[in-house]
Structures are given as structure tokens and as C-alpha cells.
Image (cartoon, rainbow, N blue to C red; front, side, top):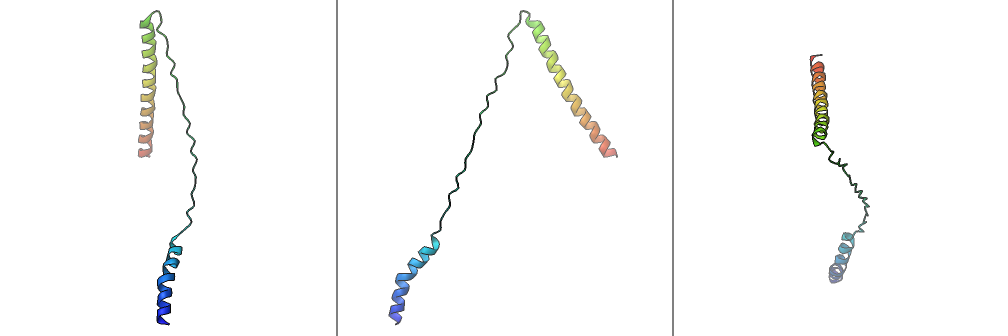
Length: 85
């Protein structure tokens, strides 16, 4: 009887343990959509008088810089007001 149980243990138990380790793996497919946007910058042609064109461009840039600096300054003032109150 002991030999019979030993033979069963030797031959059957490895199959049982292998059956427990195999698991069904579910594969999840992920779909990714990649959108590519191409931005084309408008290039202004050189005018007849490049100096005036350069002055206009510098004026636009300086206005942008001034507005950015004013915005930062307003944020700083708001911060000071909230700290004082």
C-alpha cells in the first residue's frame, strides 16, 4: 500500500502542481491614436523699405514684452495684497 501511494505521489503530484501554475493570461490590446499637427509659420516678405518693416516688428515685440511684464507685475501686486490681508 505504501508503494502504491508513493507511486501515485511520484507520478500524479507533478501534474497537479503544473496545472495549478498555468494561468490564462488575458492580453489587452491598447489602441493609440497619434495625431500629428504641422504648424506653418507665416513668413512676411521683405518690403520695399526694410527699415520700416523692422521698426514695425520691433514695436510689436516691445508691446508683447511690455504686456508680459505688466501681467507679471499685476500678479506680484495681487500676491502682496493677499499676504497683507
